Length: 515
Image (tube, rainbow, N blue to C red; front, side, top):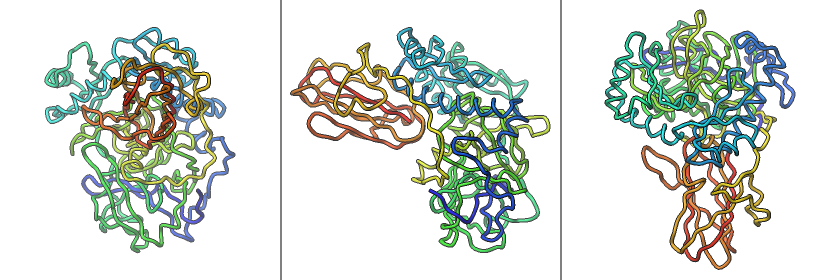
């Protein structure tokens, strides 16, 4: 969808205490002079190409190639996670951004990885096993002390605990208290992160009359930003002190660093799906919100430093801020400084998240974490405003979701989905976990699944999402004449399907589509 009047700008920032940085919607009649970037469908804004050239050392063609490869890798890795299930160990792009590596725990799964055009890496532990290990650390977070954080590192097939320089013993002690074996843990050092708030004089965007932050992205009815930028009920005003809206939702610290500001009616029709890269008013289009994989290039805009780029280093990281631990953040090697909080993150023209915090600065470099935008949208039932025209990632190769059975040739309605295959239930009342007897990791977005029961039988299909240390049902397939389908629009997380025989037995066909 496209609106015409107010651009979401990554400008003014700052707040006292833990309040972070929003960017403000330009007022009607005062839109930035730079105007929206002229970008052909499927191309990359020149501002991002320039920033990627400066920070990643690539020319324009190389930058475009890396972004295109990242879009392909996002779709392929998500599909392979669904195909290989409990054998999946994670995926990442190599340093050059062009080779997708996928970790799996057996040779049969490795063959599927090769067929999809990626490089298989045989590992000892599955992603599900590593996620369970990280969950133990999350549950023990009260004993983390001054540790920086922890995350699953697919490249080492371990859980990495991050300590402050000179304090690695604390990391090993924490892992031991959480009940983890040393063989599952790696330790590294990094300065402790903090929310990137700042305090400044002028107040172009105000929270409760004295705090400033940066807007992340425009959504229907308002904008998303960092959670530490305010609590529900906090009032926001525009550059002229006029009533603008109020904080409607906020989480920080805890399971996220996310916030949503609902704007007044006079602002709601004036939001634009663009991001302003600096105070000179250069604007970037936001065409969608496809999540980029580890190793993908990513760029950040903030009111203090403008636009800087780097790569995604890790996902689902727990960051131990002085205010408390925050789970589910994404780590990057992009620099940022005080006042950049809440600002927008893009991979090409795809929205990725909003700035949470970090360490270092843009003189010597640093590490910065962002809150994934798709989780904010899902948790608050929000719709991102987009310019449209985003390039679709090519589909992955087809492969069966269960056993070693070949793909179904013509299985009614289920055959149209990209991952199709057959398996069998031997007796009435029995159940199976799919795919491959385990769970899989999916990007945020809509999942679709279909099951065709054998003649004379009735099979049910449910989708479950991992919540804490258990799975909960989030969707149930419905249909008639032996074919049932379901759809679920959810956040990036771990899921599994359960197939259950209500009556009868035999071979069924199943299809899956993942975002």
